[in-house]
Amino acid sequence: MKRDLAIIGAGTAGLSAGIYAAASGYRVTVLEMAGTPGGLCTSWSRGGYLFDGSAAGLAGTGPGASLYRMWKELGVIGRCPLGDPESFGSVRLSDGRTVTVWTDIDRFEAHFLDNFPRDARAVRAFAGALRACLRFDMPLAGEPRGAGPSALSTLPVLLRYGTLTLRRFLEGLSDPLAVEAFGNLVHFGGTDVPLLTVLLPLAYAHRRMTGILRGGWIFFARAIEARLGELGGRVLYGARVERLKIESGKVWGVILADGRELPADRVLSAADGRFTRSLLPGGSSDGAEFDPRRMSDQPVQVNLGVAEDWSEYPGPLTWLLPDAPSAAGRPQHRLTVHHRCYDPASAPAGKSSLMAFLESDYGFWEALAGDRSRYEAEKRRCADLVVQAVGRFRSGF
Image (cartoon, rainbow, N blue to C red; front, top):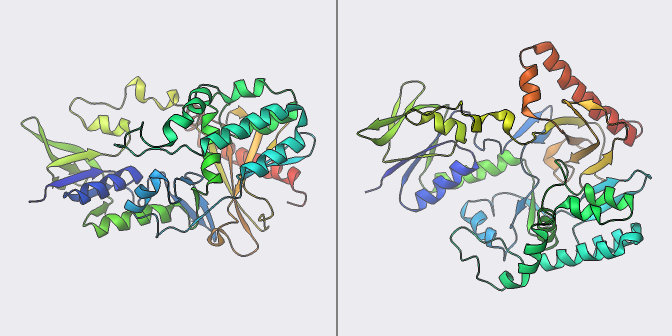
């Protein structure tokens, strides 16, 4: 007899857990307080323009990658239209030149050697590390990590570039313009990240295993939801879990905010840790470890629908802001603008959907929340900064 499993949250974690549970014989019900699946993996449509609020792409979408099997099992492969990026974007240097981060390693190496001959040794070392990473494959959970031909051959690269930060790599460059280019391979956040986090996505893209989704990330979430339905699972929307139903020290289901009870043999929370802890007996979401102000930096996303065609640019554009204008509580030293011209559904013909991210943090916005006029004024300041910066980059904007 099938056992009932209630999953809290219809984000990608909850939906994916539901698929594997249903495939293992559970009768699955996913409870989602919102009206759409995906959680943070979502999209918005405004005035004919489509904006995304999720990842840049999917790793392992090409045949031969370990993750490819997972994407097939989740219903992504075959349902979601995926493309292969030609580049990871371009960087406008302070001398006016633009360098492009091509996903083809040979093309990338030749392009960077041509632009930064003073740092030819570092460029070749970086390209060599990329080629070494071509043998690396991310194992699925449960697979032996030491198995496969890639394990030993990539170990030196993993040991070296898994501990070497991007900041340390930049310190070894002699050309300030090379520092600008390599330093902006990470579109937001600092440079204190392992260089491996830059190498692996580029290596996957070279192998045509980094899928760029067309149709928006809500399409991705809907594809996983559809696969869950094929396996007999269901999603209840507008179903906010108020508390767990506990008897004799055992969880027997959940109680919703509207008073409905949903019995279940097992309950799995795919919500965030703060909410999950609040459901537990004596639990609270007030602990210091759940204080959003202690979280890592949180960027602000600015979306623009523009009556221009940006398809001439091969991927995101990054340029420096020498005057470091202030917005979102931080001086903004650079701006990266993503366009979705690779997706015909993203904007009307001849127009473009643009997204930019500004450095910020949760605490700044929490402090403004008590004064709505200041809060809205700061949002306008963020939008104005992006519009003005793009206008300086692209005349006539």
